Length: 116
Image 1: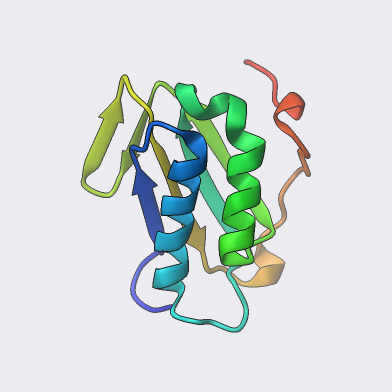
Image 2 (image 1 turned 30 degrees about the horizontal axis):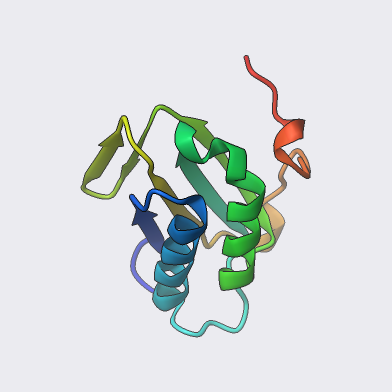
């Protein structure tokens, strides 16, 4: 990988299709690296919230990135696009030193999240 953070975005109405589209964009930008980055960040609109476990599984399979964090909200901003009031998914990969990434979790499923 070179130059910026690999990222992908999708406005596909179904979560599975959005995850495949975003996963493919990330994989294409990774450029065949031997070791994937240690962290991925995923942002989903509320319409995809119920499928977050499957989305993360798809992104893990597409990229080899094991640790994921992110948020679900009313809208998603990705690159030069803003998605509000409809389905959206975006993800980016963080190529930091492996010992510099220490997730608090793991949160194994959507049930592990709580509203604040």
